[in-house]
Image 1 (tube, helix red, strand yellow):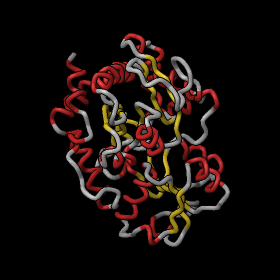
Image 2: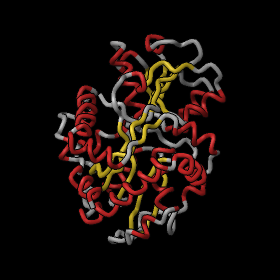
Image 3: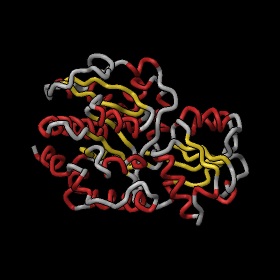
Image 4: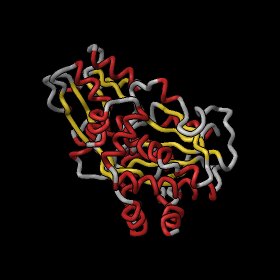
Length: 327
């Protein structure tokens, strides 16, 4: 299965993140006209960097759009907001890719490949067998859930071998730090927060070690018109290429948006592989992106999150992505 980067959910979102980059915070009553883009994101490098660039470089304005952005704790909650009509676009990691694959949204652009997901355990725990019968926290439906299930599968175990507890990311940080759980399916940068409180924390399993590709992506609600999608894809492509060409400046912009230090943003970005728009368009045309998504879909079927693995063309608008690049 792919080596993607979901990537992770934000643990603590400062109040400033609730402000829109362009106009005002996104609200459920926000206008859904064709010039307004209501965009959800997760407060990390993967989820925020292109939005920070698009604002700074005035890419929305150049496209005749106004962006209203709002932070979320994870991908599945954004998919719910898309389905409810409260958002137009959002960001998800690989662990939530089963939701567009099940028809809940459309993937309009691949963002990065990520290697930020881990199964962590208390000091001294070296293998998945050490978690047998132990309480393991996980934000269900996210890449943290994904990496846990991958690691269990590889170890010949199932969720029946552990005491799996569904928790939101901030609760996992506090529960692991206080010893209320013994392990977690989790992700960076939130793991760095735990490391400060639990020296000697063990990284038992990692998506980085699988040799697969784990894409993060931007998604659109199913009712968003194609013309609007095309404009948004073009903005994301322009921001993506600026990020590829200006890595240090991107880290600074992202850190400012998220109200974290540049050192924190740098550490977060170290788990990410960025690709140029040219490369992503070529990989879309060649079918490589479809292979990443099919591989994830196979896993989700084995994990009973999908009944069947659909053709990625049913939920990835690769034709729009390549057309936008050629313009």
